[in-house]
Amino acid sequence: MTPNPQIVKSIEKLDYRVTVGDVAAQAGLELNFAQQGLLALASEAGGHLQVAESGDVVYLFPKNFRSILRNKYWQLRWQQTWEKIWRVLFYLIRISFGVILIASILLMLVAIIAIFIAINSSNDEREGGSNRSYGGGGFFIPRFWIGDIFWLFDPGYNHRRLQRRRETRGNYQMNFLEAVYSFLFGDGNPNADLEEYRWQAIGAVIRRHKGAVVGEQIAPYVDETDQYEDYMLPVLSRFNGYPEVSPQGEIIYYFPELQVMANHRQANTISPASYLQEKLWRFSQADSSQITMAVGLGAVNIILAFVLGSLLRDGTIAAQLGGIVAFVASIHWLLLVYGILFLFIPLVRYFWIQGRNPKIVERNQARSTRAIALKQPDSSLRNKIVYASQFAQQKVIGDRDITYTTEEELLDQNLKNSDQIDREWQQRLESGS
Image 1 (spheres, rainbow, N blue to C red):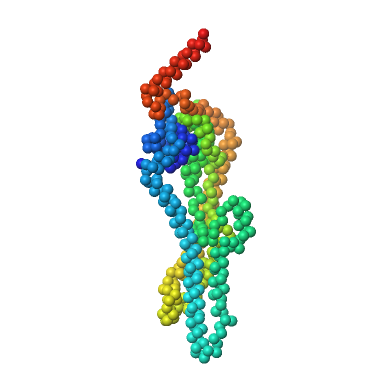
Image 2: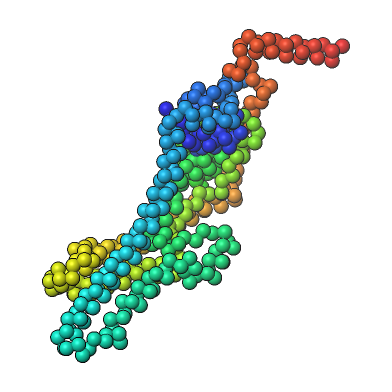
């Protein structure tokens, strides 16, 4: 079984000595899943179990356990290699859309120029060469466009002042080819890790309140609430919690396994915001000048495709000229469709975002309202919180609490425990005398 990366990261963040509750709260994982993952990881990475007198178990891992796993699992080695390869491949995919757009414009420009030159030469021959000088006509317009296209590769890109401002803020500025991809498809889901963060935040809240909470303390991190607090059922299932009814008939929730930790520092390893806030979708992280240029080039691509189509109505001209003109003529409709989709896809995506963001704002406002109500509790909520505090506790398993560990032979541990008991009795006798 390949190790779970969330468990591996949690162990490293928690200084390699953890309980099941530590990992479940840190990573937001289901308790049973975290326990199975820790057992498998301890077996494969040379970890050790430390059992306290209370029966609680602490997992101790060597600090090089990631290297041990890497040497054991070819999947991990391949995953790391593939991640490096994929970063390069994905970058090439991203810039390919801009390269195709520019190549499309260049190909059609060259084909149009070639056709114009051929037409003009034919007219000159018919008119006896009296009009061979065609430098002052409209035939030089395509050359202007060619010159404009090549300056796009200038690293300055006519935004040097904007670039300096962004660099002072420490933000990464994408180049134009990356901006084309961002214009087309955006920059990914801004809330891709929302569920992972949600459960991490809920686990941190439970830890902060020493394993006993009321529903109102979890409500700012869920999407919807209800009168009967059904939204707490997934939380109870995930962290092995138990409901408890107060004398006033109100429900509180406590989580015994999240009350056990390997050291005090692990109680506050995550400091979540007062409520779960979803990020709004952005159309693109490219700056406005890059987006304007992308739109302009997309429009130029469509215009050139229509101009070329009108010139190619007579099918004989492409056959006569051959070469690049014949090649562009063969893919003319493909270039036209690409130009139309280049502007159509972002347009659809823009309206989709406009419909999605108001719903995100509404959910954020609802969670914010619950967080404000929690900071200003009424008497009923205060009584619930006070009752929940009766179940709150923190149990820290230190080295002195360990009665058995797989780091040592059982006989050595028994001798060590016997010596420790003898010393404690000796100290008591001496203090009593």
